[in-house]
Length: 34
Image 1 (cartoon, rainbow, N blue to C red):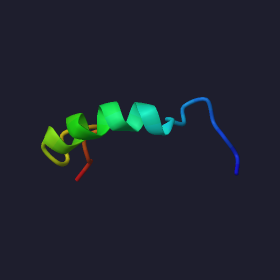
Image 2: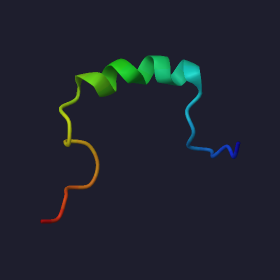
Image 3: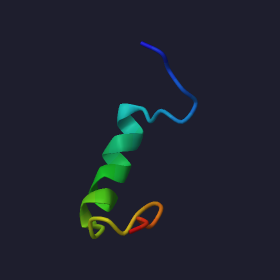
Image 4: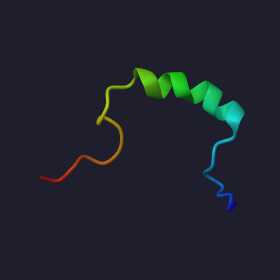
């Protein structure tokens, strides 16, 4: 398995997952071009 510096460890996911679940879908990241 190739590990990248941006990979999150399980402990970090336990912190971040509830935050991601509360966000509205499609509001994170680049806006889509139509």
